[in-house]
Every structure is written in C-alpha cells, then in structure tokens.
Amino acid sequence: MSDHNDDQLVADYLRQLTSAASALPADRRTELVEEITAHIAEARAAQGPAPVVPGILERLGDPAQIVQAAAEPSLSELAAGTQVASGRAGPASVRIAVRLMYLGAAVSLIKAIVDLATLGATRSILVADLRAGARKSGLSTPAGSLSSGATATLVTAFVLGLIGVGLWVLVARASGRGRDWARATGSVLFGLGTLALLIGPPDVGIRGPETAGTRIFAAIIWLIGLAAVVFLWQKDSSAFLKVPRSS
Image 1 (cartoon, rainbow, N blue to C red):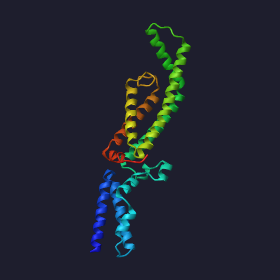
Image 2: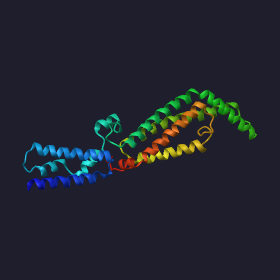
Image 3: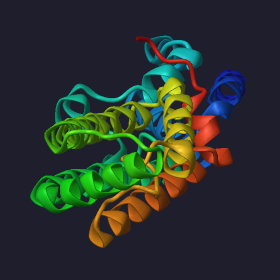
C-alpha cells in the first residue's frame, strides 16, 4: 500500500512538473522531466523500501521553481557568454538567430573597416554629387565647404556603423539569455535599417555614393538581419523567450 501511495505522489509531482514546463521548448521540457524522473528513481533505490518519497520530493522543491532554474543560464555560461551554444538553454531557432546576429556584427565591422579604407574615393564621389546638385539648383558653394561636409558625413556614418556592431552583439547576447525585449528591439532596429536603405539620405541609403564592395556588404548585412528576425519569431523561439526570468 505504501509503494502505491509513493508511486502516486511521484506521478502527481511529475505531472505538475510537466505542466509548469509547458512554456519551455519541447526538447528541453522532455530532458528536464527525464532528469527529475531518473533522480527520483535513483534516490528511492538508494534508500531502500522505506517510505522516503515525501522527503525526496521536498528536497527537490516546487516544480515551478525547478522550471525557472532550468530556464536560467548558469554562472559559467553567463561569464563566457555561451548560454545558447551549450545547446540546452534555448531551441535551435534561437541558437541559429544568435549565431546570425554575431555574424552580422562581424560583417558590419568588416564593412566599417572597408568604409574607412575607401573613405577618400567615397568622399570624392560624394563631393562630385553635391557639386552637381548645387549647379542644378543654381547655387555656388565653395569646394572646401563641400569637402568638409562630405568628410563629416562619412565619419558620422562610420561611427554609426561601429554603434551598429555593438547593437548586434547586445541583441544577440540578450536573445540568447531569453530576454523577449531583445527580440522586439532587434525587429525594430531591422525595420529602421530597412527604411534607411530604401528612403534614407544619400549617404546612408542605397542611393549613396558607396563603392560596389560597400554596397555588397550592406546587402549581406540586411539579409543576415532578415534571417535572424525570422528565426526569432519562430514558435519555439516565442516559447523560450516568453518564459519569465529574474533580472
């Protein structure tokens, strides 16, 4: 009779654990339930036939707290910044999105370096465009002013590019840690970037004076951003990102 009662207690406990873990990705949920089931079985076997199940379950704690702890990154993962790479903290869609964002950061950094290396050529093209526009408008602008303005514009674009690298990394790390705000932030930044390419000023959008190589980098970065956003809005990603976490 005691064994039957113990079995019922274990079944009820695992049922509560499964219900509490419903917000976790399916593979992580299955893994967690299997780990707890094996732990209970080993503890019961080690302590013999005595009615020890209530004590085992008490030591395990509230199923909801177990699920919350399972959803949080370990201290070592936080220190190394590799929570997602461990393969246990998030579904494949989130891991792929994070890798894509790190790739986007790397490509953006390369683009910034290319922009800096081709600054002189790009400035010459931009000055020529500004001079042609001034002629069409019947304006007379000193060449020095045009050159200074072009240089300031391109330097600003370079600085913004470096800021973009930091934003890629920030959103990637936060997404890997399961912060839902990161997904929203990344989506908004991608939308703003798309608008800048389509309708932005000549020095930012696709109408700009950049070299062919720079334009290719811009297209690659946009495609990476699109893919990352798509993966972040997958069903498994939503289940992972919406799990409440302590700050």
